[in-house]
Length: 70
Image 1 (cartoon, rainbow, N blue to C red):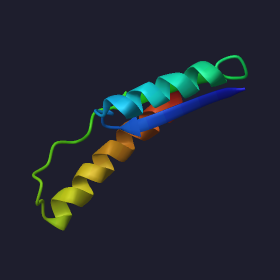
Image 2 (spheres, helix red, strand yellow; image 1 turned 180 degrees about the vertical axis):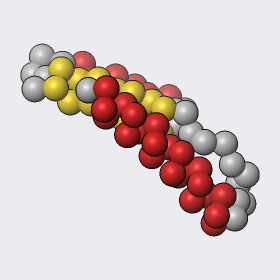
Image 3 (spheres, rainbow, N blue to C red; image 1 turned 90 degrees about the vertical axis):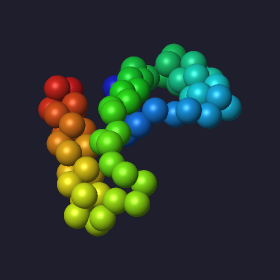
C-alpha cells in the first residue's frame, strides 16, 4: 500500500519531529510511506480574510499538483 502525506509548512518542534520519525520507522515495513512538506504561503499574522483565502487557495493548488504526480 502506498500512503502519501502532504503537509503545509514545516514541523518546527523537536518532539514532534522525533515522533514523526518514530512512526515513520514503525510504518515502513507495512506500507510505502511518503511525507511531503510544501511551503506555507507567506502572509501577515493579521491578514485580511481575502488575503488568507488567496493564500489557502495557492496552497491548495500546490497540494493538488502533488496528488496528480502520484
